[in-house]
Length: 321
Image (cartoon, rainbow, N blue to C red; front, side):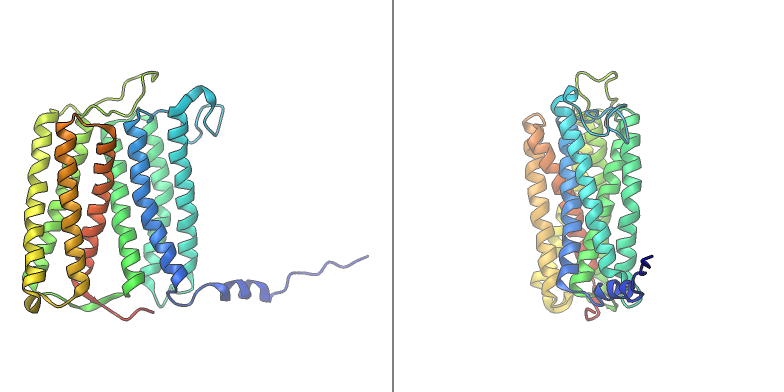
């Protein structure tokens, strides 16, 4: 009888040794991919809602009661909704890969380990929340919570990219206290702007359901015109504060700090806000066209990413490892 040989005990260690021991280019690429996919997911999720495909797959976790994937009977709405679900699968694969890429660094780079672990744990949470969104027939508050989690994940993955690129958080502040205070106040108004933007969307015409749905998706009951004006107040305050930060960072570099990185991110934040304001005003004047509304949603994700990068730039970073 031929005796079966057992796998070499050195095989697991060989696989383990293949994982990076420090932050390499592939690790940074995977971190960037996770951030990009989070922003893209906001765009595709917005497309699902804005094309009235929110109930394109009427059940969860399967697309229909009898099919895991979309069927021809569901039409284009089913294709759009199911494609968005599949993008989540792609994101899940990237998240697993980025977690494995830092697993061997779990002691030397605890920040990267916990950031990737948190992102990984968010995937099933987002999936369940997406299911609740469908089962609640696109309740605007559940949809809004879904978006809140998405922008939080954008902030988390921005932090992951920042730490992978520039190193772990340092012990000292890189800017004066008054400038740091200004940045944090701006960040608070960014958060307020996003929240009121969610409420504005929940009151508007893009409910996310299609004409064949059994029940029309509810609205939050707020007056769209009123909440739109309320939403603009923190947005313009954010813009004014950012202008002050740009002036301070560029004209008073000797007092604020000579960090080129900080000045770059503050300028980027201002550019995103200018684009957001232009798109916001235009979409309101044009009756909320689908394309502009979706661009506005993606810009909201980029706004959070830029604001996060500015906040992270307030402190020095240790040398990367």
